[in-house]
Length: 291
Ligand code: CAA
Image: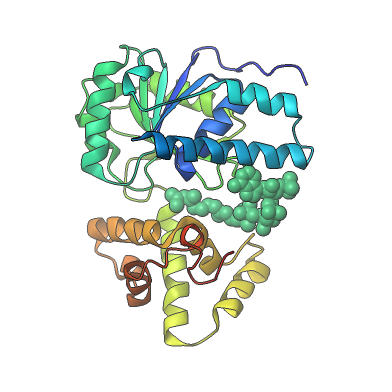
C-alpha cells in the first residue's frame, strides 16, 4: 500500500491528551488515517504503556494481514509520545481523552487554550461531562466541542459530535470532515448528559443488572437473550464489562444527577462491584472473568 496521506488538509497535526484505552485508540486511528499525532500522558511509565498498546494492536492487524508491516511502521512513525503539553503548540486539533473528572478537564482546557494557536479546535472525548463547562475554561468557546469515540475505537464506526450553544458552524464543519476522514459516521447532538448513545445505553445495561440482582435470569441468559433476540454483537452485561463498570457507574450517576429519573439510578450490585474493584475487562473480573 502507498503511504497514506491525511485526507483532510485543514487539520495538519492532531494532539491527543491521554494514552489510555480511548486516547490510545484515537491516536491509532488518526495516525492510520495519515495524520501526525502528538499524544501525551502524565508520566513516562503510562506513556510507554499506552504506546505499547497501540503497537500491539497494530501488530495484531499485521498478523491478521489487514495491514502490512510497512503500514504499521509508517503509522508508528507518525506518533510522537510526550509528557510535555507544550508539544501541542503546533496542533490544529487537540482531542482530550483524560480521566473523567470535570475539574481536571477544565484545567487541561485552560492549559491547551494558552499553549495552542488561535485557530486550534479543542475537543473532548468525555462520555457525559458538561462540554459547556470545559469551554468556559477557555477564551475560545466557539472552537470547543465534543468528539465522542466508541470502544474499541479502531472497530467502532460511530463518532458522536457534541455541540454547545457556543460552538461555531465552522468548527462543527471542520470536526465533521475530520471525523469522516477517519472513516467514521457522524451524528450530531447538543451538549446534554450522556449525549445520544450513553443516554440510551445506560438504562438498558442498568435494567439488565437489576434483572440479574432480582434473580429472574442468569447473566448468560440475559446476554444470550439480547445478543440473539436483538442481534446485538454482545449482551448488556458483557458490554458493561467492556465499557468498565466504573465508567458505567460514572455515566449513570452523571445522567441521574441531571434528570433525577429512576431509570438512571445505579443498582446496588453495580455500586458494590465497583467498590470491590471488579471493574470488568480492565481488572480481569466483572460480570465475567477474563484471562
Ligand atoms: N482494536 C482493534 N481491533 C479490534 C479490537 C481492538 N481493541 N477489538 C476487536 N477488534 C477487531 C478484531 O480484530 C476483529 O477484526 P476482524 O473481524 O477483521 O478479524 C473484529 O474486531 C471482531 O473482533 P473479535 O473477533 O475479537 O471479537 P468479536 O467478533 O466478539 O467482536 C467487539 C468484539 C468488536 C468488541 C464486538 O463484540 C462489539 O462490537 N461489541 C460492542 C462494542 C460496543 O458496543 N462498544 C461501545 C461501548 S460504549 C462506548 O464506548 C461509549 C462510552 O462512552 C462508554
